Length: 357
Ligand SMILES: [Fe+2]
Ligand SMILES: [Fe+2]
Image 1 (tube, protein in one colour):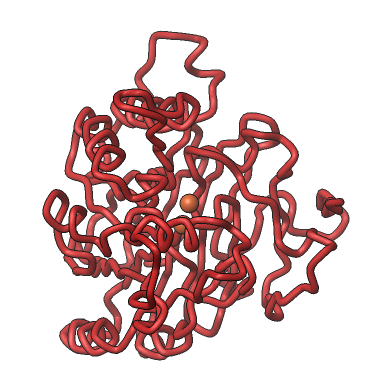
Image 2 (cartoon, rainbow, N blue to C red):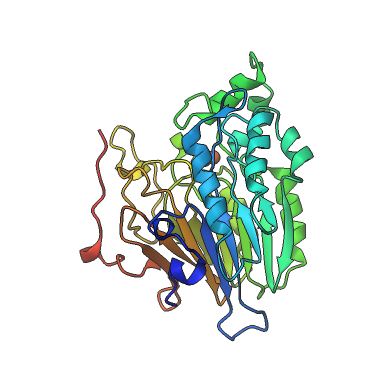
């Protein structure tokens, strides 16, 4: 599939063509094998809009989201819908969420939202629910079952401990490496709901699950982690085609665990470095079943950008548009049974990992 952004954009400005597109386009393709029809959806994530004072917001984060929305509006053919992957706000404030929704209101098309920890831990999702809707839900679209989870819950004892103020709780969860944070989890209530929800779905129907944190355990000190990930994975196990797409990590990640393919989407705000290359902290990475070839975190905009995402025969393929690096395509290799970087998966062609000091 020779997709490039020119094929998807109606544009008049050459400057725009040269820019980075901070959103993802997802294509669901069935390759003629299923009765369902192909379609696309867009994905924008991790905007982190931060209020400075009054109407003043951090401009760089604003611009990331504004640009994503503008460029999403140029996509052709029109995606069937858009996903927003969480962390719309930086500190969960009404002003930040309102500001984010105002920018998002310029996006032409239906948007489904995933909540992130930065949206949640000030008022525990109250304002989000009043303005946007439920924190977890599912929907069907053209033969695919989509599930959205709130994966950033944590232990009640942590949420309700004696915080000096709700903002102190928010700040404790907002920092990447805060030792006073708490591991993310989906929790019993949602697991029960998910089990019921998936019981109604035919085992051959492609299932795409959206979460904010990865439903796999990557790096606990930074909460690239979901405590009860295995329990969600177990519920997805009966399905022939299961994919988890998540935000939060602000970088390219892909993996395969059993029948489940994992992909991260990029942020519009900033990239995080890769835990594996962070030499100060002992690596807690699980054994990755697919060695990853990744973008360079030292280019500020490298790990921000957008992707085309296909779901070919129910399997997701990601097309990353990287302004400071060569573009990447991570497609499902059905022979190998896992996602692979089309051009850079082989050891000889990889970009070596960087060491941070
Ligand atoms: Fe984020
Ligand atoms: Fe996050």
